[in-house]
Structures are given as structure tokens and as C-alpha cells.
Image (cartoon, rainbow, N blue to C red; front, side, top):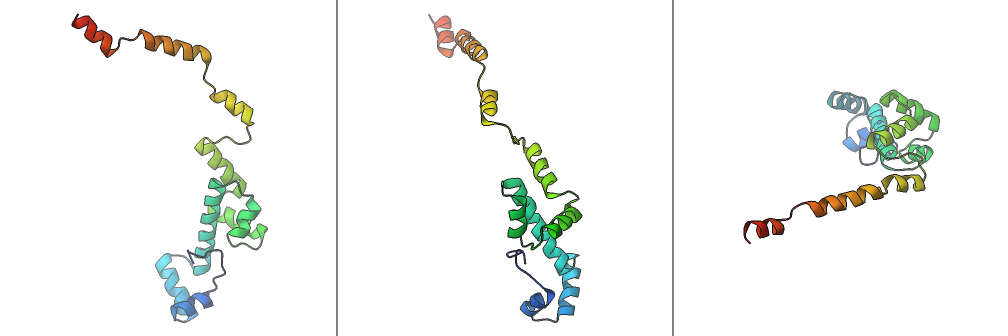
Length: 142
């Protein structure tokens, strides 16, 4: 289920792969993982969706369908149920947490990262005025 969380994994399919009855599989799975198989699968899908929201610029609809959801409404409700936020809020928070700019024009970003010329000249002069190892050796050993 983890490797292919976008696929459908009914308990009957999981039980068949495990060579046990569906009832036994469901009971054993919940004992082992603390969640029923279906809820576990939904959680894996939401975890993958959160990663895609944080690390890509894919539209939320594309993320929902690529993580195995057939309905955008179900995706949104389940997402809020598991994370406590809607997908847009998670993406916005990820941008603000990492310091990545949102919708800032490139010209404004460039201007903000441009060095201030007065400071650059002052820094160069300050470095020229600092004694170097060579000047220190000349002063102590004429």
C-alpha cells in the first residue's frame, strides 16, 4: 500500500495478497498499525499530497488526482480531517515557513537582493585599511 498508495486497496485484495481471510487481515492490520487498512491508506495519500503541496507548484486538483482521489470534494474533506487544514492553507504555510516568496514580481526580488553600492564601497575601503600579515611582518622585521 505504501509503494502504490494511489491504487485502490480494498481489504479483499490485501487479504488475498496476504493469503488470509478479509476479517483476519482487517483485525490483524488494525492491531499492528492502530488504524483500519482503509484509514491507513487515506493517511498515506494525504501525507504524499502534503509533500507535493510543499515541494511543487502543481495545482491542488492535479495533486488530488495523482495521489489516488477520484473526487476533489472527498480529497478536501479527508485532507481537513487528517491535517486540520485545507490544502491551500498547507501550501501557504509551507511557503511562509521556508521564507519562499509567494507572488512577488521578479524585478522586486532582484532589487531586494542587489547589493547597496554605498555599503559595497565602504566595505572595500574598510578592507583596504585593515593591516595585512605582509604589512605586519614589514613593521616588525625591517
